[in-house]
Structures are given as C-alpha cells and as structure tokens.
Amino acid sequence: MRLPEHAARAIAQLEAAGFETWAVGGCVRDSLRGTEPHDWDLCTAARPAQMQTVFAGERVLETGLRHGTLTLLTDGGPLEITTFRADGGYSDGRHPDGVRFVGRIEDDLARRDFTVGAMAWHPERGLCDPFGGRDDLQNGILRAVGDPDTRFQEDALRILRAVRFASKLGFTVEPETAAAMRRQVARLDCIAAERVREELTGMLCGRFVQRALMEFADVIGYVLPELTPMFGCNQQNPHHRYDVWEHSVRATGQVPAEPVLRWSMLLHDCGKPACKTVDEKGIGHFYGHPAVSRELAEGILTRLRFSNEDSARILLLVEQHDRPFGDTDKLLRRRLSRIGEARFRDLLAIKKGDVVGQGTHPGDIAWLYDMEQRLNRVLAEDACLSLRQLAVDGNDMGALGLSGPAVGEMLQALLDAVIDEQTDNTREALLACARARMEERHDE
Ligand code: ATP
Ligand code: MG
Image 1 (cartoon, rainbow, N blue to C red):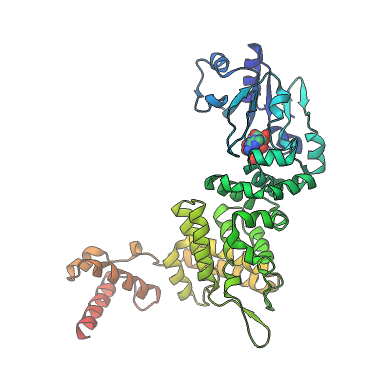
Image 2: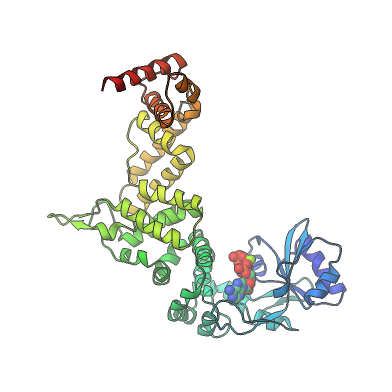
C-alpha cells in the first residue's frame, strides 16, 4: 500500500505534534483490493481544536468540525480528517445522539458499518484490523461490524449501503448480515428521501448491479413498492425470455453506468404488470405500458426528490423506449429535431439495453447499431434540425404580419417542412412557403 503525498504529509504533521493518525475506511479497503481510492480519509487522536492548531495557516474547511471533521484543502485534493470518535445512541434511527471523542483507533473502527470498511492503515505501523476486514475482503464478504440487527437499527441507511457495496464490489453479503437487513428493512421509513436516492443511484451504477438487484429485490421493493408487481410477472410472449423484473434487471446491467440511463432502464417497464392482457392464443400483451410506466416513474422520482432535469430525462426515456424510430432518414431527422442529439443517443442506449434484456432477438441489436450509423451520417450532413438553423427568424415572420404565438407556430411548421424535404432551407423558399400557408389559412 502506498499513501499519496498529500495524505502522507498530513499524517506526518499530526504525528510530529504527538497525535496518532491513520488512513481509514474506503481508501484502505480499495488499496488492499488493488483499486485506486477516489479519496483518502484520515482519523486522528487530535481533537478538533488541536487539528486547527496543527494546520493553522493552511487552507481548511471547518463545516464538519462539530462532528470532529476538518477538511484540509491540499494540492492533491481535499482531505477529510476526523477525530477518533464513537457514536452515542441512535434514538431516531438515523443520527447519532451525540459524538463522543475517544482515545483509541479500535474504538473508532467499532462504530463503522462493515468490516471491510473498518480497517485503518499507517505507513510504519501497518494495518489495524480488529474485525477481520482483511479476510472478508479476501473472501469477498460484506459483514456487519458487531451485531447486525443493532447496527441496522442504529442507522437503517446501512441496509442500502450494503446493497450498494454488494453491487459495486460484487461481494456476497454474509448470511446473518443479510437476514438482519431483511428483519430491519421497515426502519428505512425514517431515512430521508435524498439519502435513499443517493444509495440507490450508487447501487444502480455498480458493476454487479444485476446480481444485487436479483438478490435484494425484496429490499429494493420495500423502498420502491411500485416495482413489486414486476417480480415474477410472466410475459407469456415469444419476444421475452424473462419475467418483467428479470428482464428489467438484465437491461439495467446492459446500459452504461450513468445514473439517468440506469434509472430509466430499471423503470422502463414498471407499468407492464398493470397493462397485462392475455389473448386467446395465450400470448401476453402490454398495450399502453410506456405511459403507465411513466406515471409510476414520476411518482417515484418525485418522492425521491430527483432534480427536475434528471426527472425530465428519465421520464422521456421511459415514455419513448418502445416507440419505433422509423426506417427513413426523414423520420430520424424528425425525432432528432424533437428531442436533440443527446436524448436521441440516450434513447439508442435504452433500446439496446431493452433488446439485450429480452434475450431473444440478437438481430435487433445489429439494427440498432445501424441506426447509430445513420444518426452519425445525418449529423455529419449538418442538416437543418432546429429553429436556430432555419434561414428565417421571428423578425421575418413579423414582417409578414404575424405576431404572438403565431410566430413560433409558423417557424415550427417551416422547420417540419424542411425536415420533411418539402422545401429548401433558403430565405426565399421559406418566405414563399410561409406566405402560402398564410393564404391557406385565409381560405379556410
Ligand atoms: P465509497 O467508496 O463509496 O466512498 P466508503 O467505504 O469510503 O466507500 P463512505 O460513505 O465514504 O464509504 O464512508 C467512509 C467510511 O465511514 C466507511 O468506510 C465507513 O467506515 C464509515 N461510514 C460511513 N457511513 C457510515 C454509516 N452510515 N454507518 C457506519 N459507518 C459509516
Ligand atoms: Mg469514501
């Protein structure tokens, strides 16, 4: 294990002042697994005021100081340094009642949730591992520190953190820990929606998301009850090999690990169970499901306080996931003009995930790659796809005598005409087209 320069320096500064200091938590876990930690956290015997003295004159943030955390702003990035502490009780099931500073690193490690995150490391003293974290890491096991029921009662967010770690690390949750997660799941009721959202998003973006979603479907279903009808919902359809849940899980694992895409894929078919009908041949159908999925998804996204921007992106993808692109360049340009290149590419990713998740139509994937080629070609042609690229503007419409909303409507109609190749995108042609349309109106 090697410490980056900025962490080594901070440890040396604190120890020179007489305070025992260690690297701790996720950075130790990740270094031991051979992956680069995304940040380094330190813990120290120094009390907050003593840290302030040691780092006097350096750039620090003091926002977490009450809980014992000082953030040192270094050239190597921010470094969180926290006084050894044990949490008091958790009477509300989410916040420790008080912070109690302690003298020993072992007591600090005991408040942490999982053994693989409850190790500390020091360049000379080596590893401090009182709970067998290194063995669990070696064996790919996620195990609660201490009595699992108590730990999930103290802070139910840990239940979702466990699912997130299972998804990120591909670890097996130790059976007693997993059983306690299930016994305590109702305590998730008192966790703030934003924190639930963040853990679920992290979980969805994990490499092992499929396994985690299948294994902990019941836990996910507790926080997203709208999804439970998907479990075991047989599609009875030759286009589908899996039930609605497994199909959605497989599709989720197929799209790039980007929150909007992963959420869209998880939710895209959640309206299917409510729309299911079976015809006289015994084939299942799900007419109108994208609209129902959208409605359910909207409820979930609102409850979890998604930003308006993310919510709009997800809902567009859920709603349009099943809509055909059409075979012609004209139809492609039309859709492109409506939703823009970025959303179009999102939609291609969603459709690929959907097709792979169905597990029956490898040929459709080739078709989607083909669509991507066509998209690239249309974009390279620099075709007119937006009002901005139109050879006339609002002033021209004003000069023709239009005003108010009629201006925007006419410009949109002209854009559609250009996209449909009914007119060239030149000033003369567009003005002529606009005049013809105005005359038509008068004739009506
Ligand atoms: P990541 O790679 O996701 O950052 P991490 O293990 O560093 O993983 P953090 O959420 O950054 O996780 O927390 C840092 C450390 O603090 C954890 O390793 C764990 O020891 C402890 N910790 C964080 N949240 C909790 C919690 N809710 N309950 C108990 N310990 C926690
Ligand atoms: Mg971390």
